[in-house]
Figure 1 (cartoon, one colour):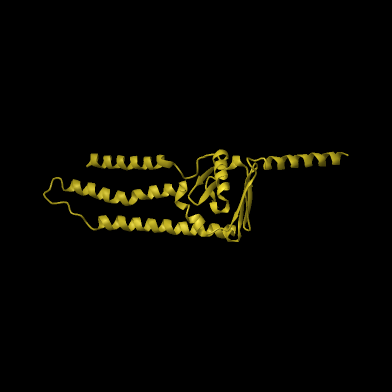
Figure 2 (cartoon, rainbow, N blue to C red):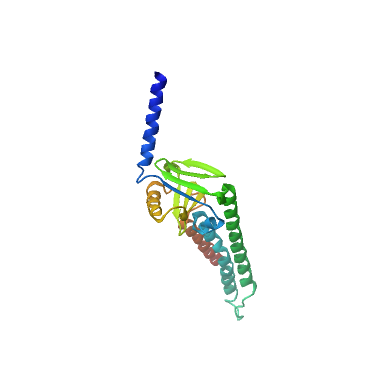
Length: 225
């Protein structure tokens, strides 16, 4: 009798859970597609950590000619010699900038390749959004996460990127859903996914601090000179 009662309670709980999922703002949103490397590489520059890296690296090629120009200008203030422009002042920043661009481009490709291979995404992936949260099923990976455990959601032209951890992102191609489902999913992500701080990001505050540091160092250099 007790066992039957417990079973009945479990059935009721299960039915209640199914009803909750079914009532999730029009029902669950489920999408399926096969992943490609382009799905990941196309969102690389939209990710906050990567944008932060670009901002930091951008200071290096510009700082070298700026420092050279200021120091050369000071050296010619009390002399009649004209300001000469050594070829290294242009060659070094160009080489450094080219190396940084190539490194980021290559890193983006490696990340995209590894992501598809680890998930075996070329074999097909299923994404599900319901009252319980967000779940993913692929031959290489499966997980289910509650809405409250997610960190951030970012939308690009062709995909949604959901951070499931401070430094871990899941890319969801929009083609996995119909146009109507995309509209509904966009609204659900904005409503349910928190906007938490991610690891290695400081937004414009980080770039602003770096700019202030460069200005302070330049001012100190001029003062000492």
